[in-house]
Image (cartoon, rainbow, N blue to C red):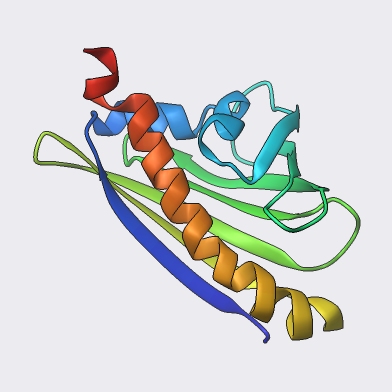
Length: 156
């Protein structure tokens, strides 16, 4: 498998701006992404080229450090994009893109990913049989957790 793509969309009962602010707060990534154990290194500010490192620990897999490189951030357009890869020199990477749109008194959050496994074992074993099936479930759970954290219901 040379690459694979995915997308997920969910409604969040909060303003689009509050959702954007929450998902772009790097220190809070482990609050809504269960595959992220902790943030090791956060950027001082999120500007083009900023990097951060997290410890990944998806269910059933060993821990690894993942480094992300900010490709785009635009609060006016409510768009956030970055490239992530293991922090061990492996050439495999995933491009992530988030788009938030104000709708019906809340926010529609869409996340897209384009994964590019480069090494033999990732292309043949890890990605097709482990990571690809996990990602859709992990992203859906993350979108649900985002809704739980920023939802107007949580403030009542």
